[in-house]
Length: 222
Ligand code: MD3
Ligand code: FE
Image (cartoon, rainbow, N blue to C red; front, side, top):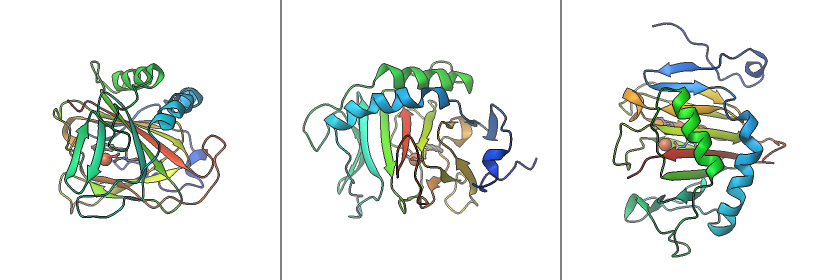
């Protein structure tokens, strides 16, 4: 195994040069700054989505309120309630369809997926996660999608986060990866069902998002 640099030192890491593409594991590719130039357009794209489908804290099947605030755009959106996790074409809060996925978002996702080797990515869902200081996402797998051959494309905006990337078994040791605004990760191949999570967000202020981190995950759900 070659040693990859540990990217959890948020003070020094941004000063180091970063390669344009880094393999975290087989099929998991970090593209540092690949969305940097698109950040303003992405945030402008989600503003009307949030106006139509406001942030909400979903309830897990176990009855816990998620600390991450969420919304969706696309043909379907990821939802959780007492009955379980699933994709649904209807926003349960409004009873209407989710807002359509803005072209700026879709095009960025398709382009970065291609850079990572997934040339025919056709996302039909974009889950929008918002983290405030203290918000975390515990270790989980993304397995509500129908076809695990399609990757998940993740775009980080605003405050930095430490991402936990584990293995295919919950008990596997997780590596920590610092994700900055504009970073993209494409998760596919053998790591598509890896356990992953986000450490509690540190307080801070970001020029684009204020006191928040926003993460976009593009998926082919159906
Ligand atoms: C690794 N979101 O919404 S994105 C999620 O930063 C989620 O908001 C995190 O995990 C966030 O489900 C992490 C990175 C990510 C997404 C999907 C993956 C990593 C993944 C699927 C398989 C393996
Ligand atoms: Fe996930």
